Every structure is written in C-alpha cells, then in structure tokens.
Length: 206
Image (cartoon, rainbow, N blue to C red):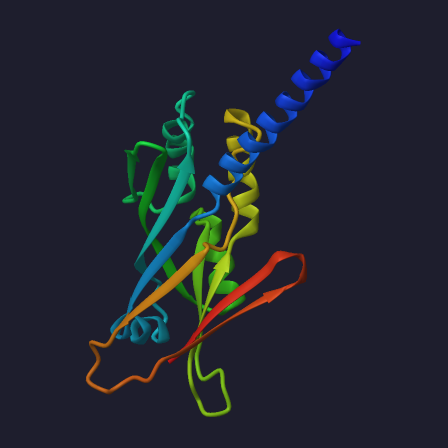
C-alpha cells in the first residue's frame, strides 16, 4: 500500500510538472504586448495604391529557464514569416526570459486582388487592411488581421522544436501609435471586438 501511495504521488507530481510546463510555454507564446506605429502620410500613400510597411514591436515573456534553447531555435524559424529586416532580442532575467521582435507589417488596401497578389510572394503573420471611406461619415478604416494560414505553417515548425511552443494572437496588450505628419488634421478613433471561436479584430478609424 505504501508503494502504491508513493507511485501515485510521483504520478501526480509528474502531471503537475507537465501542467506547469504547459502554462509556461503557452503563456510565453502569446505576445504580452504589441505596438504599431502608423504615420498619416503612410495612409495617404496606401490610398494611392502603395503598400507601405510600418513598424511593429512584439514582446513575449517566458517564465523559467530556456534549457533547450527554444527561443533561439524559434527565432531562426520565425524570420521566414516576417519582414526580412526584423530584429530579435533575447534577454535573460532572474526568473523570466524576454523575447522582443522588432518587425514591419504591411498596410494593404482591402482589395482581394491586391491582398492575394501580395501574400503570394510575401509571408507575413500580421497585416493591416485599409478600407477607404468605410463609415457613413466618410471615415477610413484600418483593420489588424492575423494571417492564420501562415501562423498554422509556423506552428507546425515550432511543434518540431517543442509541442507546447505555439504562437497565439492577439497580444494581451495592443497599442497603435498614430503620428500625424499630414497637412490636414486627422481625427482618430479605435475599437476592438472579440467573437466566438477566437476571431479577433482591432480597428482604427481615421
């Protein structure tokens, strides 16, 4: 009976260890914060048919030690799905490890032909879709869109590093920094909506 009790305790410890390990990695793969900077002059160029890359910063935090060097391995895979000029920073703290990605995401006019043509030659996890004169008042709309097909491909590769290492979106905290550098004054509004089955949209009205 004592042997049975010891084995049961060991099993419970293993389960608890696995759950804790799962929490550490799953929490670490969901960005803690994202910040995107948009200039109003960028929006004007998109109106004229250009595709403009704007800076986005993603911050991740993982509890515990990265004993198998998962973050470094993940970085080498993630670059395939990001802008080629992306930069990665890994900082080790006493109890956590910070993983910061400084990248660029495209603002694309919300036209199916333009979108399909762009993503045919570019793998990006996130994009901003621009809708001109979207509201009844004539305001433009910019929508943050997570590219699930590329995320699925990325997660398959991350799975080979560690089955628990999967990218989730959106970030726990999402910020848009809109800088007015146009001659005409711009008014900005924003809202975010969560839908069932993890559909998520964040939008700016300009």
